[in-house]
Image (tube, rainbow, N blue to C red; front, side):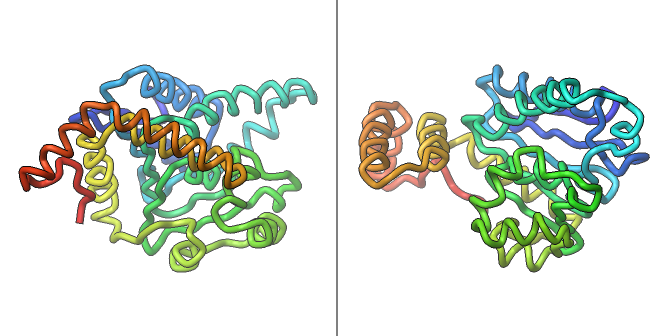
Length: 258
């Protein structure tokens, strides 16, 4: 692969955006390579969590404007190009295993959208987030219309989209965009420790939790979903083993890293 690095170690996959010349911009080659990784993770049931990060002090600077200016597509061509992005993005957002974005430096435009596709965002104090599309006369893409209002609420999402202003790490933490801040030298290790904790978690329960949170709906719908999900979780060997560990006063196998 030319613009990313990908490795799987002890059931944790790590995808690193690595195109320093473009500050890890989401050009056509990088999008194709990310799509290939997402397909691989989706199909490989031995992988229990995915970490996405960026090399060179940047997460992702957004879309590749040089490519956008030179490609010369008509309206239908742009629609097809976005649909190809949406195919793997939807697979990433709905992946039935945890996704952790480790953000250092810029996460702008589509790069911000890529970070928001994760279940957890951890960042360094020098991380910067920006829904930058309006600066170049565009509307947000890469799933931002879906993800951002669910995290910060509709009013704040509109403010961030319409102002196209930068959000620093501390504000991102306050808004709930980032879950925690880590020093740059500790960022990837923390993300991978979080991911590794899910190796001992129930894959059925993890999948059901992600699906239930994404589903939304009214109270009656959520309670019915809860009942159905709990019945499935109770039937797993992971649950039965965990109950036996509890009764025998053994430590739980699933432990969130301190």
